[in-house]
Image 1 (cartoon, each protein chain N blue to C red):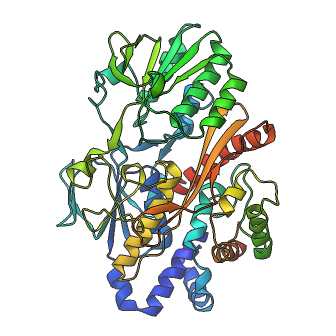
Image 2: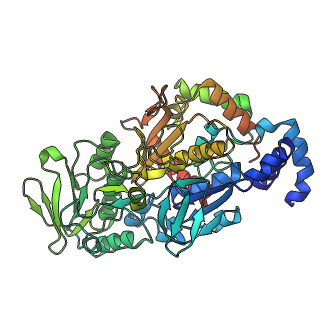
Image 3: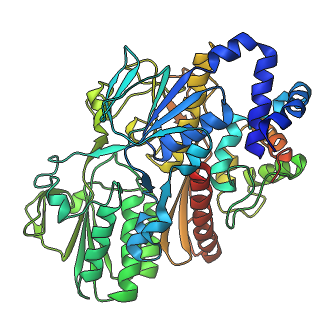
Length: 96
Length: 424
């Protein structure tokens, strides 16, 4: 797989859905623990490739202390609904 | 492969949109000084997200030893090679890595002079130089003294950490390990207390009659309740922590006699003496005129650009981070925002709104981890960084063995994840 062979597909993808090409900056904060591509690391679960609605629901439950969590309650309360939605959309479309 | 396709995709999108601009941008030079958590993150993030940038990293050392997990080397549960990384991964991602010392910055000409004589020009500079020990700020503590009384606070090539580890190994059972802790601000606020914990873990296993005497120039410290709960539970009677109000401030050390002397003249002579000394931004920041009277670098809250020199974004421990700690995660987070701001400036766009993130885990014993979390944004005026209200904070106190066990596992996973992001 060289960049040359990818290029035609990439152009099509860029035209079709440029918004999903890069993680929103808010999602960059996740990567230090959940892996550089959201693929998980050690005992920390993957967030890439999971359903966006599920990710949003998990974050909402963490924020409301309605889900057992070590640190994610403290984390989730720092982000807006819009940021969480953008992160969820991004990771839902990322490959593990 | 993901990286390749992303890079191709963005390159293609940019070319379609505005070929002339893309060609001009392809020559934009981002220079990064320092290959630690801030600099390595900046370099990889720039290549990943802004592939049109020409990225050069200047770092004198060919291997990077992390500060995080150095305390586990002291405990004997990690080896030095476990916390040592090369720059091969960054090279493979298209970063030009120059192993030389940045000898001087000319902010007006936008050039950096290297120790080897070469001069590099830049369009934007990411400066992540780390800290310097303020030798002389603590009487009796100079570079020669550090060879007898290790600080083990700047890993460099690992010499300092190895020295302290060897001294701990050579100490007879029943000895006292002295630790001096400076006033704020310093690199890694929970670090001294994780170190106390990890040395205690080692002593408990191998030299159970030994003690730790920690003299602190402060009254309170990061995650204090959690640390002290753990010390009482895991290492009863082993650790004495002395705050400034009980004569904990050390004003003088003597390397030959191995003495730490307090403000009111009490002289302690431990078997091993670890001096965590007063610190400031690394020297190049001061030499370039970027520091204020505190010795640290004031920056704009949203772009991390130096308040003294436009075009230079200062990240990592060297800058003044407002309420954020001087941590590896903050270095990672600020590096990304600095690069995104630099890239926006180079394209004549507005920098993105900053959102900074921190998590610091500390190991305090086997299967026992604790943490502090923070989410930060510039205030409404953009003049300072503020923590998001009702968010973040430390682990809950109380008898929560499952929480502690999981946080120890997550601490290891954090280390694996963030080092992979920087160096894989």
